[in-house]
Length: 329
Image (tube, rainbow, N blue to C red; front, top):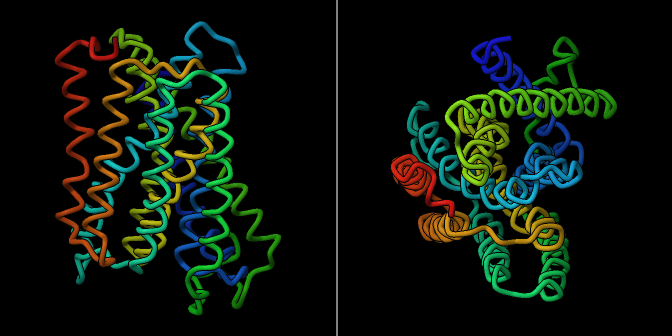
């Protein structure tokens, strides 16, 4: 099968899977009496984080020669792409919708999500210069931090009162769908997102091999393009339906998951030596998170301002192309 067909098939799976997923997550949050922020930052984030969680786990379990580089690159590259390009695409969606072209959130949501992400990700970067025992302790603290974040998120916000659109697999039925039907649609959607991401990764690997891209660059730049597609597509769909808190929560909540859970994997199960390219991407990630926290301090940001979040990722990719990947050394 040609690379072009694999790309097309993966995108189709991701688009359909994202639509099924967002619809099912809205119903799950509604049935569980969660606020919009908790639904996006926890339920949606955990579901769509499966592809990027699988990349380092599978790489390390196979003991392949490049497993360490792939795992480290995935841990650092996922939040880098999500907060930069993901926020930028969210801004595009905000600008192209009718009426209000401003992302509107509860001010507590970005403070909570990014307020956990920034110190957690900073700690992971500091651990680059620490010995293994200290990294294990730091990793355990990151797990505790995520547990505290989950509790704080569940306690915050008010339950959504407006009933979502009918569940797609039983659109002809009025009223609330059974929990088993919601679970079924959610499972099908996650399966499609994982399968679509894997196909996309395979196609990108073939392209990268043809271009002879370095392994760490592949993991930092190319693989996250596929693994972060579910979050990005979900956020675009939610922006289009004016569910801004779900949209931002999906992006920021996923980044928080990555800064704690994925970082734990990196600190404990890899050499955690990302080299110059990894350090640069990590610093750019933190700067972008700080920028988003500042512009969303009052819970509002124009779509045009969110576009600026994509500049660090674009600059990083251009630098890699110009240097021929030598920035990874």
